[in-house]
Image 1: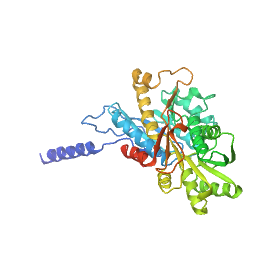
Image 2: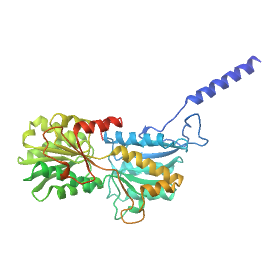
Image 3: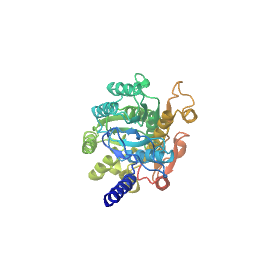
Image 4: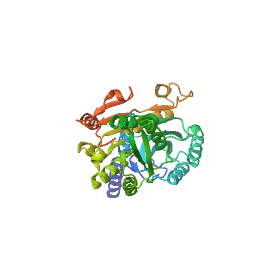
Length: 378
């Protein structure tokens, strides 16, 4: 009897411990094996192992913190765990080879159901090739933030969700034009010059700024923030008459601010940038930044998970709501919106200088928006 009581107690403890192993998909740097933990949600334990919905980034930057927050909120709001799915954010290293290897790992795993990928290099055909292989295996694929080459590889994903980067570039160029009506020389700084979002933003910037502006430099840093800072210094060393510096990826704008501070060159330069890294927000508050064109990575993560779940569940209502014209020209694009952020006081920029769909906010109002979604940047 003592042995039976001991065995029963041991079994009860084991069951209690098992019940405490509650897993929600988290932020990961590598795919796991096939047997994911079954989390308890509202008292219900899924009857099958969880399948992963993976958000694969192009690199590791604060921009992706907001996307991860959106993806995890979608997991909770849409009750993904009840449906047998967990959301995992897998951060790449800014290299195409890294994404290719991760996609191959997903193909060999048994628990990957869907992938939302920010494509590192739109000209590298090996990335969409691996995406097509995943699709053939039944894995749902969308792109977020940065798309594939839409001429050669549109078939490698269901849709793109994110910024219309050409429009975003034009809005940043419009900000430059509003700040410097007489134009001048400018430099653009970005992580990977072959990324679709980089090319589209830089091209759009030239269109929005107009013919009075001349691009003096376009420098890539490969995702290395030290190189990003040295690029700014080198560009200024080579161009004494530089008028404006533009950050194209999220961490480029803080790098610009750092070097301009070091060189005490703020008075002769206008500074603008994409995205709202926390240091860029601080910099604007300190008078070190004239304008930010801000995407909505939170919605990229949220809506990316939303459409992937709908595809996995064959929820035609959601699919039609998000992509009513899918199959027609550009019907596979979901715009997550843009904001233009300016300092609280003294900016010459006005809402009417930007597109009707672009939200125009002063810095404090933007901070309130961030607080609403518990974000530190966007």
